[in-house]
Image (cartoon, rainbow, N blue to C red; front, side, top):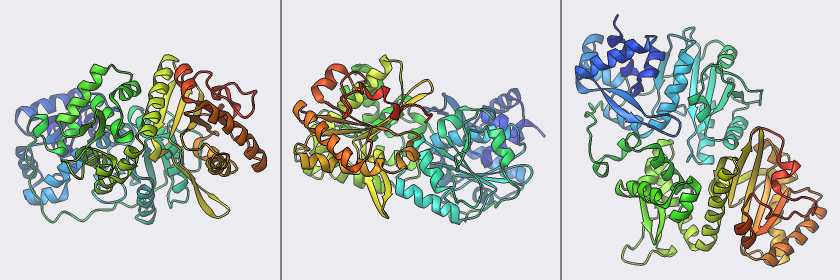
Length: 549
């Protein structure tokens, strides 16, 4: 059997594979796969599609053309309509896979790593099931793959995992998380799953081979390699199907069009990694000034204008009164990439004006959370400025800013005496220097000027740090950084904090500063004061150092 025939069948089951992935999964050599791709493309049976993301270098992903569908149906002895219904080849499937193309690429890289030692394997995509995909190994063991996207809402993803645990049981689950905090949260939710659950950061799983120790169990084992993970997977497991589509529409061939005229679902293959990074940041930090966006990215004002201009021309971003926001189309693109509810994202974060003829004030913005940020624009800008200063100083100090979460992802929930409590900081970050890590919460205070108000601001953190949850959520106890606009308020807050910590008998890793000092010294400099005057800076605090993320 030729490599071309195998590749045609493989692209029928796994559309948008690149050639390296196809070589690993098919068992053919790279040379044979590259030659087969040239031959099939020359015959008009397959077509390439460019793709790149923050995790995957620029590559060409191949899919069947209409002629390729007919040729595959002839070779399989199937009617074209039956072929479409039995494989992810319909117009609806193509749209779904292209919308999720960044996640599709990461899962294909993971599948290629599994296939390097478990060949031949079978693979199946799912449209609406809680898992994204499933693999069946040669000995019949099955793996369910679940990817958590950057924009996935905490509650919605928890419900998805509940459906996963209550559904068909595989031999094991493989879960990909976007950051260490959400990896730990997912591990807690999967601790009582009916089958073993193994978790890894998505960028580690996509970039690593079988021998890199990037996986861990839901119970918190030492890091494992993929080879070790597969050795622990028990026998058996379900191989569930999915109800076929009622309509099996033949997809049109993807044609090159101007970016502005391209359908929304084709844009994940059209945007560069830098443009995708800017769109992610606009979603994270709405109403950001271009200067602060440049500070987060470490690029010039001209480069910011260039990248933002591409997104504006594509209809994915908008510039309102000199500030940048993700448009409704941009929010929809990100939500569909991450299998989130696009309607919910627009209701919360839309910057669409209710009355285009009126000024763009906060009352005229449709998204309720976007409206809240615009209403407190001075506070929002201060948080953006701090984040940009921190990112710039981290680059200059050779520190790695692993994570910088906006307010809606920085919240933490915990139980205190049977009641669900929460902290809602203005941001969360994670710095690393070699093996040392420094997690921190940020609170930018403008209203806490009375002692009673200051005590109210501290109370949620005192409850949180009185429990074990800070260490459970982050591996170590994060610092709590509080910045005031006024120097006098910062000094009063320190006095109130000492009294409240003494009453609560909680050692809160607290550091306090004010705006003028932060802008002069920088977030990583000597701008901070602690209730314990012996502490010089939060980066040297024993409570914040000493464990891996």
